[in-house]
Every structure is written in C-alpha cells, then in structure tokens.
Length: 431
Image (cartoon, rainbow, N blue to C red):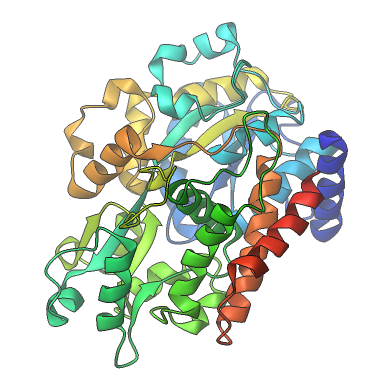
C-alpha cells in the first residue's frame, strides 16, 4: 500500500514539474566519466550552495576523471523530486536527503543499500557517528544512505536587542521565551521569527514539542497516533507564538524558505529557532559577536510523560539511486564526500558537524554554536520515527500547520479540539 501511495505522490510531482527542471534527469546515462548529483539547499541560497560545492566537485574530477553535474534543489521541492525519480527510474545518480525521510525513501526500493560490503567501501559502519547512522534507514535493515552533515536545532538571539530590552540571558523555557518576546516586540520589531509555510520545519517543531508534552506521532508498531491531546497541545504551543502571544510578525505566515533568517539578521526579529544558522547569518553580514546561541527551550512544567527533548536528530544523508548507470563512480563520490578532508571543508562552510568519528574532536568544530549542536545531539535530541510513513507525517502535519498559521495571521488562535479534528483527518489519510 505504501508503494502505491508513493506512486500517487510521485505521479503528482511528475505532473507538476514534468521533470523538465531535473537537470540530467537520466542520471549518468551509462557514461562512466559523468555523475549527476542533487544537492540539498544548505546555505543562504541555491547559488551560494553551488559556489561552495563547485571547487570540491572540481577536486573530485581531478582525482578520478569523473565530472559531477550538480543541481541544488530547494527543500520545498526535494522530497517530491526524489519520490518522482524513485517511481520513474529517471533521475540523478547521487542525492542528498533529509535524514528524517530515510525509512520512507528506503521503502521505495529505489536506492542502493549500504550493506556490509558496500559501506565497507566508504570506510565501514564504524567510521560514522552512531546516532547519525541510526537515522539512515529502518532498524534491522541495511541503510540506504550514509550521513553527510549532522545538525540540531538551537535558539539564536540578538545580543543588542536583548540588552536594550533589559534581558540578561537567553530563555530556558517557553514561558520565558514568550515573556522575553513580548518585551522585544515593539517599534515594528518582533520577538521571534518563524516560517509559517515551511512544511518540513513545521513537522520538526511538532515532533520536538510533542516529545516535551509526552506525545508520540507513531506507536511502537509504527501506526500513526496523530490525534492525541499531547500532539494537539504541541502544535498549539508553536502556532500560538503568533496567534495568541503575538511575538511573531503575522507576515511570517507566508515564510517558507530562509526568510526568517533574513529577518533575524536584519534586526527585524530578536530570536530564531534554526539548524546551524551561523553561516547564513555571516553571509547576511551579521558578525558573530552580534548574536548568541543557546539550546532550544523546554516547558517549565512538563506534564506526566514529558521528555527532555529539544531537537530531533537532524542531518543530511547521501544516497545512490539503483537506476544509476555508474554506481561504481557514485560510490567513489560518496567516499569522497565523507572523507575527512571534505567533511572538514563542507561542514565548516555550512556550520554543521561532521558525521564521521575521526573528526569528533577536531578544534575546527569547537565554536560556541557547534558546541550547542554537539551537546544537543549527545543529550537532548531524539530521532524522528524511522517508519515508511514518516514522509507522509511531514507532508500532512506540515500542511495542517500551514493552514493554522494562515488563520493565525488573521488573529485566530486554534483550540486543542480544533487541532485534534485536523490531526484525525490527517491520520485517516495515512491509514
């Protein structure tokens, strides 16, 4: 049933895009000297990502004689593009995927499994950070990707705006964040920047807050449990920063791709919840001493069953399509991208953490931002469920939250019961 649902989604994506924009949609086409690579948008823009990747791909070509044609795909398009390629058998050789999609994409059977022999060719299982590798596929099955960049959510705050408001430290609880946000919301500036139309980010925050409220989105058997009071409370908490607390600009309801980072960097908002924002802030001209970073807040008084979770185990994996006519070259490219040298270059460029254990103590990743990310991943991050329906969870719950943010921009604060009704409908779509 899941494969049929995947096919339906992919067919819609194919109709929407007609694959016209899929640069090199036929992969390497049997050319052993060419690879096509879809990279995820990790930087301030698609163009900046291409600029960062270009010299590294040239380095790979010089070493191997294999030319890599790269297309940077925005997050708003990436999942549908991957599903379309998985269904049609037409697409790139190598792709970046959000690690939360690992089990969903694994279920399509369209990707090369990294069994013991295959993963051995890129350094072996023990080369990768265990928590990162655990988010590369369903438990008990060979992963169909390996980790590339490791990430976690953090709270970024504008030091000058905090000082001017008389706030001496970043909030540690959501209640403190709201109180601080109200002090900071004045004169056309806002306490918190959010992305009210960002489907994937919505699902991440829904997961994190649900954990704090003692909820789950899937049970132990992998069945959806969307319409619980805990999940509804979690979503209400996040939407109400705009709807009830009014510390978010109503215009944020339309933000879908990095606009909140721009608002934070330009001083329009004093706080931001983001994954490794430092590199993007620098590209916007914000100096490191102008912002601080702290762990994502918790509930001051969590209910029974609430967990001390303030991020999902975030990250980017790299995978190979089975339809690639140059799987040997693709595997060499994965080995190159996960080498110590490239892990250092690319993770420094993106502000993320390496996913290989050999760089765990590298001083290049010991800055304040990286320390918060590393500490979070080590102690207070939880993996999203590695179940085939996870991508449906992201799409459906993200869509529900898009609608709630649109209503919030018009002054509507949803009730828990109203959210539960929407979650019930979403759950029925999965079933």
